[in-house]
Image (cartoon, rainbow, N blue to C red; front, side, top):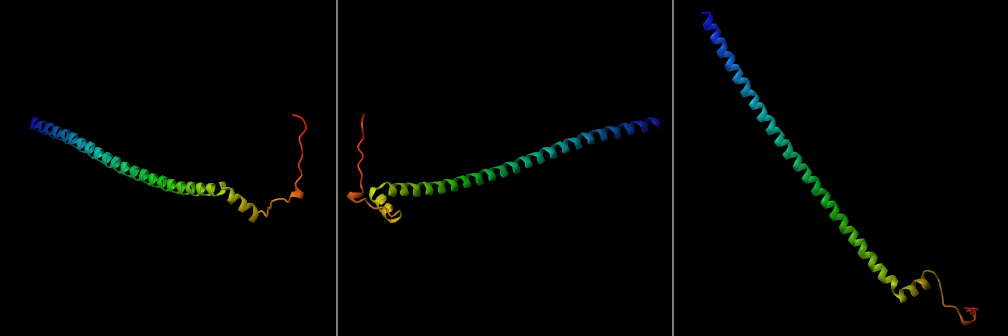
Length: 110
């Protein structure tokens, strides 16, 4: 009877050992699946962040293009001599001097 008990205990021990291995395999699979899900989620969040950064850069580019266009128009308007003459008369109150107000200084030597 004693040998039957030991053989039964040995059989239970083998069953428990194979069950433990089976549980470890399940645990490894679950951990791998969780890591894959975590990686997939992180990749999606990172892609969303990059898309947001791209949209912000595109908006900044549009604003810079608008400012550049406005500055080019202003430069063109300020470069014309008639516009400069008009601004000098209107904003600064400048006028051409009368002939008696002009003094010519001659330069001596080379």
